[in-house]
Length: 169
Image (cartoon, rainbow, N blue to C red; front, top):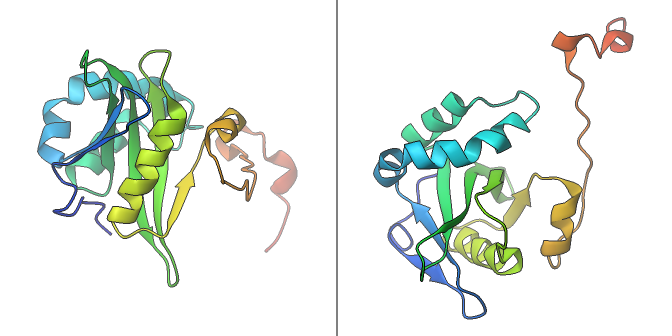
């Protein structure tokens, strides 16, 4: 399913009263025009993705609109705080706005306010669930979030799953 922003938020910017921060959902063309900056900021997050993604996968996702780029920035100084990549997934009973990658560009990001804005954007796009894949440290910024699961990764190509090889389904 395409993660294309709908007309109500395509060009909108969510301003938060509590901090100097804006969260912008970038349309495909703008994200691609700004790719040299976005890609540079996202590289460390891609490196932490356990090999599931390459930076070229993220760019391809933005090109085919299966992924959205979100820019978190300071409206007064126009400095970038962070870049996020999101995907929208539809299940039989839920539409999930999934934050797949997040990379900070500088310290001091007002994360509490950012996640409130992202929840608003997700609801505006019709999602009824926000899923964030991240390190445990994110929990302190996600008021009302429940840690539902832990992610265990076995890299079968690296030989770390050797004890699982004899298992039968």
